Image (cartoon, rainbow, N blue to C red; front, side, top):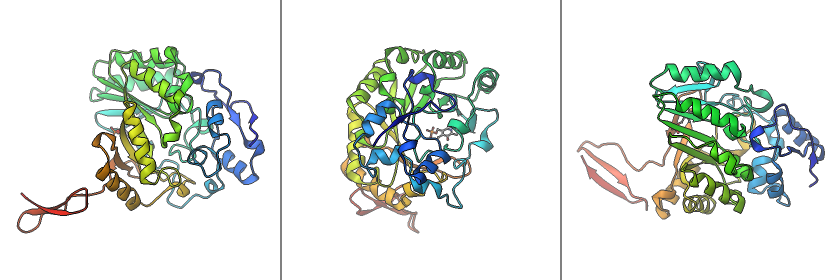
Length: 352
Ligand SMILES: *Cc1c(COP(=O)(O)O)cnc(C)c1O
């Protein structure tokens, strides 16, 4: 496939260096171009080379290349599937749970995943958080002593320059009641070379930093990614992963098993397996919840607990994330006993 270079959309992410944003729009079929116009389309040069020669139904292509199905939104799909808006006290902050907030420091990403749950809020549809708005968000954290943890999340926080990121982390560190910082990013996976020593030095803070990389398939973990993860690890960052369960990408046991084992060997602890959110035009990525439960059930039978993330659903409307199984424990019966299923599927009576 021929890739054409096009100018970066509105706000080239400074944190990913001056890497050119690649567009394939001109070479796409009209219907696919329409999908790329409806929802921002962008890949990094690194990702472009990774996608080269992969078929359209490849687990990586599916995640990043626009599909005609994106133009079909279901009635129950919404622009704000996990309900950020009702819990936004000041722009850029989502305060749903008492002890922790999301801080959306960036409005864009170096790539746009086709299943993104914030696809209607970021990129050309988003607003950068800077100047007075950023000050107000930091002031909100300062004014709320119950905030124990600040989670920098998407748009991708690593799309900020090292200088800006260091500044924000420094401002948060200076707030006495903030004890833990967390960063959710896909940059180590999609632009690993940009997570260089200089960039990683921006993360040198007295507070513990937990960094959750978004990764969905072992093929995303190249030598360059391994090197980026090593640099982060060497800087004392605790590494976690988040994976979205996606039809055609990772909705089977061998693929998930390979991914989670690989991550643990790289000192990345699988944290969440997300059931995909009800974002517009993403129904082709969703599998039924019982499929996800069966996958998790199988994985628990065969795989070290270290490799097992929690399978979660973010309840539409802003009601939070909950583990969605599988369930191993039955209700208490008249004699006060419960039936507990073991990993092999056999039931056992547990007296209480
Ligand atoms: C996902 C999310 C968090 C983080 O939840 P954890 O279970 O702590 O990982 C915090 N706040 C909001 C609003 C979220 O959507």
